[in-house]
Length: 151
Image: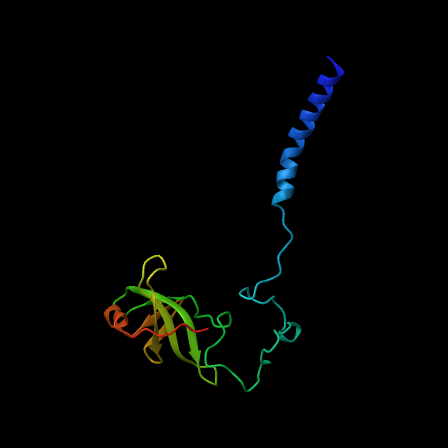
């Protein structure tokens, strides 16, 4: 076997042996910084940093709509009084004392297209385990006026 053939053979073995390692290295990425939509890390509230411009807990300037991550009703399935699923909870309106005053639910549509956002007033819904039960039929929900997106 000539010297050149031996070098080519060793080179081919090195390339073939290193290919899986190179592919695995290319797929490994450094962890990205947490996005604003991710829930905050567990811990005591006084240890978690507040975003710039955010009101401190217990301050007088509470918003009419609770933050999406803070309310357990968000993303719950909503069922009408006749038992059909009519949508999911998109946002929750709260009063100054923190009580739930109303829900905005995403209803209708197909595969996320054509859905509408409607408001369900206080007294027309109850929490039923992991779901929200409405005191109205699916037909009544479909006739509710559309409300604008909450930002």
